[in-house]
Image (cartoon, rainbow, N blue to C red):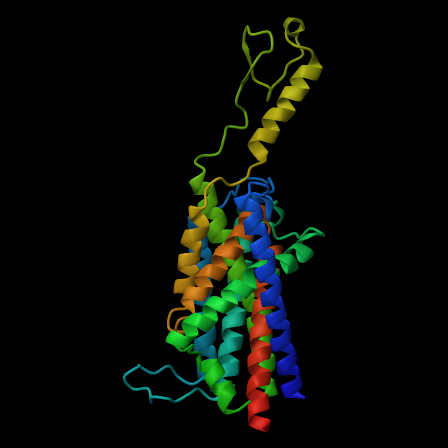
Amino acid sequence: MATTIHLTLLALVWIAVVTSAVLWTKFLYRCSRGSAHPSDLFPAERRRRPFWTLADFLVAFGALLIGLLILTSVFTQQGWMEPAVKPSQADEGAVPSLQSLVAGIAANSLAGIFAVIVTMLWLSLLNPKAIRQLGLVPQGKDILLGLRAALWILPPVGLISLVVSLLIPYEHPVLDTLAQSPSVVLFAGMFVGTAIVAPFVEEFMFRVILQGGLEGIADGPKPDATATIESPVGEAYLDVAEPTNVIADAYRPPREILTQSAELTNTASSTWAPTHYWPMVVTSIVFASMHYGQGAAPIPLFVLSLGLGYLYRQTGRITAPLVVHMVLNTITLCAEFTRILAGSLG
């Protein structure tokens, strides 16, 4: 059964790879002939400029570290996790116990959830509409957009991962333990922590808070919402934020013109789309570096982060990159578990 599932997953992956190659070839050919533009793949959507900054990412990251430190200490005192040892004292080739790994996954997941809650509460104090402006409220098209984007992004990332893994083997203590003693309990814990919680926490912290904050910095200071506009009659500047009703205003433009001008000014100050690409590059560098120590994993993860960052840049919402991230982790975890299980049964 495990062998059948594993072979089915591999077949689906290779079908996706071939389909993605055809799509990329056709799209790049259209771009070379001028009938398409790279931005046509995922058109940019306008939204409100991020009100959060790089300092808010430090709040989120600090909350994550504090939560992880507290949970690790509690779990170790309860005997659920093995005490941390220095690299010089660790036995080469030794892997943590099953209980310790499950507790470690739980600690990381709970710490991530704690960091998200703390950050959202903090930002809600700064802006009551923080949840919507953070792009956490999905739209109906976002899930389908994420699935479509997965077909464009994941196969190239998978091929890069395959190539670099031939040069530098992928290393992960959880997978090492899973290979030595396949366990449904460990797989279930890994699935919840790796395929559900981790993608949301990482996309929230890196894509929304870090990249979104950098995008606000990249485009400079916010425009003044109360800026004055030139009168259509060319004689004065009108402050559309504070129209008056005195008799002297009879010589000003009609109320309809004032209303239309105010709406245009408010729209210009409240709708925005990023114009720079370096925030997603910086975010991808940070994201990849957080996976240091897992062999060559930072290389394909950097490319993956560029794709996820571009999705967030174009939509301003977390849903599409989150769907891609969850699809990747789910397929990877299921394929690895069924491979190990098939090998142990065979």
